[in-house]
Image 1 (tube, rainbow, N blue to C red):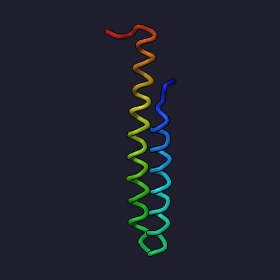
Image 2: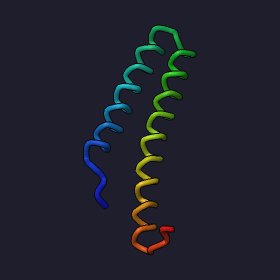
Image 3: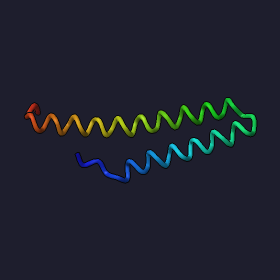
Amino acid sequence: MGIDMNTIFQIAGIGIVVAFLVTVLEQMGKKDYANWVTLIGFIYILFMVASIVEDLFQKIKSVFLFQG
């Protein structure tokens, strides 16, 4: 499909960093901040995946000639 491997590694890296930060913050007793870090990481990855899905839909439109 042509997804760049860098994007997959970026998503995995962000997940690892977020998991590390959440663990550290929970150990420090900052559960509220840990929840915010999780939420922000999830939203960032969601936007990355949304751009990949948008590219997929553009390719599908070009294959089936639905462009106006």
